[in-house]
Image 1 (tube, rainbow over the protein chains, first blue to last red):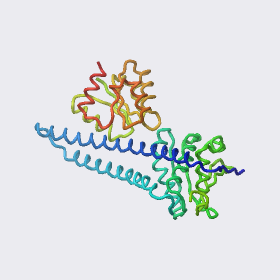
Image 2: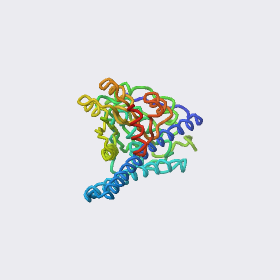
Image 3: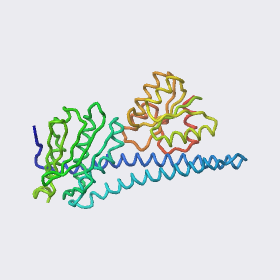
Image 4: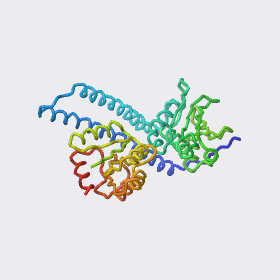
Length: 227
Length: 118
């Protein structure tokens, strides 16, 4: 059985909810960056401790130094990935409409949400098509809608505690499938935030018989959507 | 003083344990609430330093379970920038003065540990 959820967009609501989404993701990123700073702080502290020890005549362990240097470089790489995601997220508000790769946007939303989901005990995986799936849309509000649906999946995750997202081409559309949810979570009606964003993006929400939510994104914006 | 450090970032807890050891404080560490509870079921710790937000079991839930296993255990929370609500809940559990924000200077951490252990 297929159902759809659309209603006219409420711009004030979309704006306020969009800000709340931006804040939630930014706060999560800042939390991750704080962790990196804390790790750098302790690793630099160990170097300082080792220097103090050596000054007092203790042996300087070269292998330990090499390990610490390697660990710090690994943390820099991790932090750089998070900052790359943050940068892409921040630039999503640069323009109200753009050509984007829907699979890339979905992957970014998953990356931004992974720690939040892990705190709920849910793992996120994505199956990407391996080719670009371009859509012309509002990059920021598409992220917002993907996050809302992903969060519905996280909060309604089934016993596997693993939400699986896949992105595939459809008929003049891109299909984003959210699996790993309970039937109740799949069949729950879209809330006001979801319906507003669906209308704005000219998108549609379907439920498939296998117990998954499918977001149908048009390749081109609907004329009345936000122009 | 038997100290338990819990944070999902292994590089952080292991480094903290090493630095505390350098200062004469033996600390055991775990990277999840479940592992921390397993350790606490074998050794009753006198003090625990807990991250607030961790995958699976968060620090506040872990604190309540640790207190059941080790009555009298003292708790410090060590957290990244949480929300105002996180701060209210965390400081209500630990006392405002025992809710620390990362990164923290090792001397400040030890001072708080000593205050909490009194």
